[in-house]
Length: 231
Ligand SMILES: Nc1ncnc2c1ncn2[C@@H]1O[C@H](COP(=O)(O)OP(=O)(O)OP(=O)(O)O)[C@@H](O)[C@H]1O
Ligand SMILES: [Mg+2]
Image 1: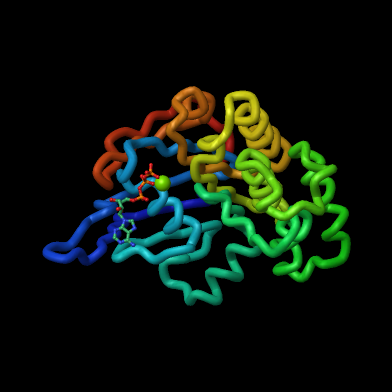
Image 2: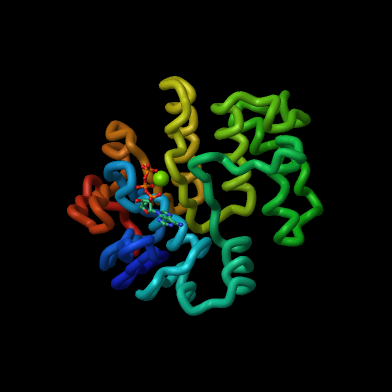
């Protein structure tokens, strides 16, 4: 199991009452699996993804990522684990505006202390997403779809064991969406990268191995479409 969530709750204190955004979530993800998480706006998808990736802490419950108990780790330990094993594609890209496309893709490699060869590797990834000629451009000089593809290249640059993608095709036209989708699936095949994809796109969800549906912070269904082989 690359990811285990046990009885996860996430609560926010509101003005009058507490808001329970995630309400007793438990699930396991196998190595190499492609899982999609679907559900209406506000159902807790982004919150759940952030917790699983160690970007945020649950109010209660246990999370194990790549065999390590992230719900018990310090911020530094979690950051170190993320640098080594986790890729993340944010709903709003989160590229650093003062860095070029190439420099953005190099960040995870530099954080890993792999500065040597980082430039070549980042260039190869940018070429892979069709942006080789745009490596010197800043995010503000790129379209939304191009920024999304830079964020995909960045997410893969540290060869993550598990990649979390929040609406990776949400802001893209159909054609560019398919390019991003195919890249995700190809990289999963080549490197056995586990993928956890939040999406509103049911066509995309239907191509994954398994669909978890969230509603009101609860899992309302967990459906296996294709069985992935590994444990
Ligand atoms: N910091 C916060 N304080 C209070 N409430 C929050 C906070 N962050 C998120 N929420 C609430 O948690 C709920 C779930 O938010 P989340 O972003 O996980 O939804 P989502 O399923 O990703 O929605 P969308 O499809 O619109 O992206 C929402 O009702 C949101 O308002
Ligand atoms: Mg969201």
